Length: 127
Image (cartoon, rainbow, N blue to C red; front, side, top):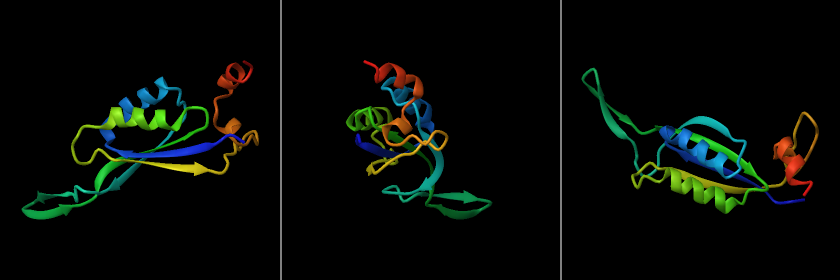
């Protein structure tokens, strides 16, 4: 079985569209996006609401989960770094995990066959 890898990207919500376009451009067709809250080095900030000061230590983020088999992991990570880096605190993190297996529930396909686009399968695997 080919190697399957999961890449989690936690970053600023305003970068989502740019990241999706960049991933599509390198052949990543599927991803899962979740709203998240978190803090890292920024440790949040203080805001005043109705005269009282509040510590806001969980900032809004998005979590993008991508599973790849055919697209090289390094290409996904390098592309994400280029798109998401502003040089400011809060740009986010990228986590890379090996996966044992993937299963497409509808068809029962496993491994790489479960995560690739069936349309791509006809062109990529018949060569």
